[in-house]
Image (tube, rainbow, N blue to C red; front, side):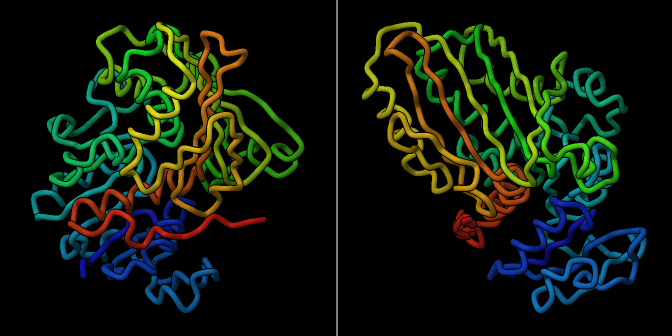
Length: 345
């Protein structure tokens, strides 16, 4: 049994962590911080957790996080980097769901996130928390940078093709959509019901923070220069993410060989479902679960391969992935506490 703390337990990724960890057989929820909600029972804010989570929020100055074995940061960018050094020095492992440790280049991070990185000495140490591609590093890590939601879909979709040298790394196009919960649990005009419901729009077209993160990770898979065009969209649903990935084939290959490539790559990945060739995965097939589903297409058997990828942006795209990393860090079965089947309808 390990003691777990959560910094920032009032947002969507925070409550999702609570939902998952509350039923994890090897976890004891020890501290959940919120400066504003100090003393408020968690179940009073989130009635869905009544009977499952019986502790209260505590202000950061009252919570002794050094007594935990691992601390999750479900916080805005910049918070984890301020507190991680002291926790690591006390022997506490850290999993950051924000972007503080995802980008290894300090200058690139500061350019995109508009804040100073206060502990660049930890950037090289942080393990990138995409378990399907980085299990060994995560298992030995004391600091994990949980991937972004969009980058998870793009990396798992492109990886087998780039690794095999089957697509032009300089012509990657990712057309991606996310539910409104991806914007976080805050009051903003753009995410009000009357603004986001019955509406569909692109955003970040000129440049999105997940582009440098994804490009840097994809570059590890190929010796060719990666060029990625990534366009995110906001769709009028609460949860869910759908990424349509395009790649130009560089040599002749059969559809059967493409399918076998993906099935072989992810045969030991319990949370990646390679569907039959030509399938159309739906976001609701992953809702509430840590499963990512993907399917391959090849229009007119031409030289373009399309990968359709779906996931729940709050689970595999955030909190579920973080718990998956925690399992690896502490030697638990990777699927422990994460076997929830998607909700339907």
